[in-house]
Image (cartoon, rainbow, N blue to C red; front, top):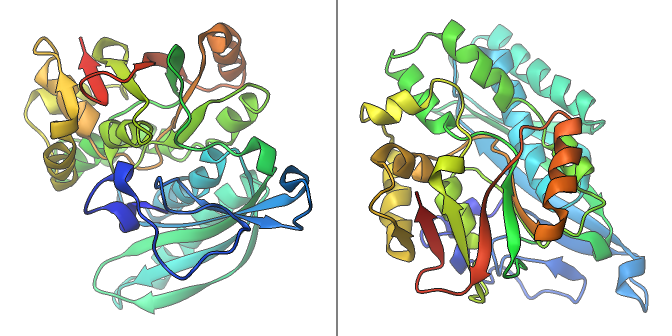
Length: 337
């Protein structure tokens, strides 16, 4: 949700926007969290109420298969609620369809999204369609969360471990696909993985003391990791050799494949990152690569690393530790070999 609000300055400088807020706003735009949270049924003990989670997200197609596109777009939009520790309950389709889009393609996009909503047990309540020059599709999603269990993108503590629940490289793959460097058949296994919901990861971790959480999308790993350092009390140290990568994707970075989003991320975030000179350029590119329907990026106390990863793996989630939180250093983010 917050990427449009903060695209000019990056996720760690989200600011208050819009009309004057009431005390029922539990999460706004200050730290560019993945969704907003509004307190319903307030009581003397705010934790007794219900948090309403709201977000919206649109993407352009990563591939030419309409149903796959619809699935990825839905998983991408639902992810913001999971990243807040919430449970999505309803959604509205948001369609920007060109005039020449075949009706069958439109139906298949919506069918793909409906498939993911069914999997997430989310009710579709309607939507809105407008004509536009570029195909875009996404959803406005509403969820619920206990005010005492909200995951924020800030809150990491020194000594926490940093976990990532999906591989990286979707931007590289999409760019290679658009350039004809990889066929749809060869790229399809990765596109299928992008349609996986972050529901299993969120549910597996619901019983753990997550200190901070976000999901990795358009700002790439580097940008979203920087967002977690907004409070200035910690730095994050990421080990490049521990980064999970979609199979076959790293070869594109090694041959110089990049995209506009990665270039923008590199320009915006590089001044805030210390990159060890021994880190290969392909892994630097991977850190700035914009993701679609990326995994959850989260921290929790080191003592919970083994049981948390065990719970994630038991749920079928390809999670791994990629770094840790340390006391604030010279740079908010350290990318090490």
